[in-house]
Amino acid sequence: MNKTRPAPDLWLLICIVGLLVIGMIMVYSAGSVRAFHVYGDSFYFVKRQLLFAVLGLVAMYFTANMDYHIWQKYAKVGLLICFGLLILVLIPGIGAVRGGARSWLGISSFGIQPSEFMKLGMILFLAKWLSNDKWDITSFTRGLLPPLGLIGLAFGLIMLQPDLGTGTVMLGAAMMIVFTAGSRLSHLAMLGLTGLVGFAGLIIAAPYRLLRITAFLDPWSDPLGAGYQIIQSLYAIGPGGLGGLGLGMSRQKYSYVPEPQTDFIFSILAEELGFIGGLIVLLLFLVLVWRGMRIAMTLPDRFGSLLAVGIVGMVAVQVVINIGVVIGMMPVTGITLPLISYGGSSLTLMLTALGILLNLSRYAR
Image (cartoon, rainbow, N blue to C red; front, top):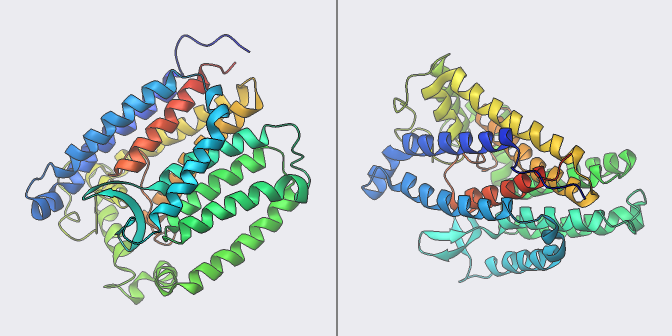
């Protein structure tokens, strides 16, 4: 094994801190109006975000300085705990319903989303499982089918909540690990077609998802219903222009864009900071993904490489979905923008995962 580097990847660390700082500023700017009207305190969201950011940074510090091989040892236990939490949250009286989904465990306004932790738990376990030489991933029945069954079980439990956005991110990151591990393209193509049929079935099974698809294709067909979020998001992005209206000067955050501090925070960012501000955020994400993939390609062991791919995949898939929804290129799924959007569980978990990636960078050649 290579001697560890004296410090983690500097560019990666700069991107993480930069995105986190921008996120704190935008959570206050985007959520201050709603926070004042609902809670009587314009700092309500940013104070809570700061609390979870501190917890996440503490977790990131420990994971960045903890030899990543320890996760290989405890990956199975972690995954079993994640499955237990996913089952527990589905029990009426234990799991709390928020936003139409039974996806929270906790007391009052404080809670965690087990589906968020499953994303990292699945990545850790698949990296451990598929790094074992005894698994012939090129064989569909003996190598590919078992991990697919595990991924499908986790996805099914998340969909029972239901939480299509988080389930899709977990599925995307998991399939990136499977692909990197050496599975055949013909098998993946077949799975892709099967997945499209499955997604079509999920959409047809739930009328609200079908409404989101029709709203995505033509939001003006129901401007006050299913198409409302997309239309208001585009109304925010359009006036932003090159330099934006100015920090704190958004008009759409005044009860036009629903929950502007969470899923649609990028639309408020584009309105206030313009094309330049949005481009800076996207460039930071691109550099983060580039450095992460560079780390994955230069690690000395298979487990580390697959783990890095999974973490980078989790970030990339989530960013693509969130930005795609905000600019009207994808149906509304309800997923946060990593490190930017308001959200305790998602922020804490993301910083924890990125801490692992920072640790991996110490071993990269």
